Amino acid sequence: MAYSLACADTGNDCAFSVTTSTENELMQHVQMHASSAHPDMEMTPETTAQVKSLIRTV
Ligand SMILES: [Zn+2]
Image (cartoon, rainbow, N blue to C red; front, side, top):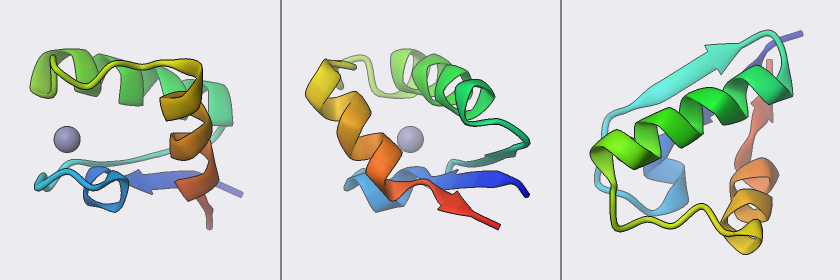
């Protein structure tokens, strides 16, 4: 099983997507991407929860 997330699904106009084998790894990629590409997007507990709800398992 793999974990996948498209940045566009979080409401950003962005082509970034990531697929990893663990949820923790996915969140690390998302946080790195958010801080470099969306510096105004704060990774609050609410944002993190929203992102987690958008993760697709494939
Ligand atoms: Zn993005």
